[in-house]
Figure: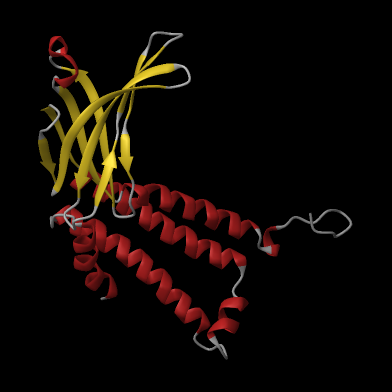
Length: 225
């Protein structure tokens, strides 16, 4: 029941369009998290206090809980990112704008700069979110002096519920100079950081379980090692 109630709240919070696969992913992830927390409550229900009950649990049990929650978080991140990511490959010139998933990308200017071993052209973008939050982002196109190679450095606006990426392609009309149009790739990826958060939680769960004394070997003298 708890997992069912969490599904619409989770999808609304992440701005994930409702679909069968999105609802199923949210329900399965919510079910794993809710079941883990209910089992934790069951373990400590007879303790004199919550603090005493939590302290009485073995590291192996804590590791299991953390790893299960991490697995659910990572699986939901993979599902939501796959199902709800939006991308546009578009031609933009300074002064023009584009919209992706409610985010408005305003291409303000193209500038040149010098790094320690490269020269760069970087776009100046003003990005406005649906909630009126905003961020200046500057993706770069770098040319390294030693090798002569050209590399793209994407600009990233990170967030717990979504990440925004902007990367520059190639100038489409180089003969027109600095004000010419560029091919630009715009990404909006919901819950992409949940994938890494889940992986960190799973690793933390495994490390916590190793601390349990029951899993330590004993040498021939009976000492723990």
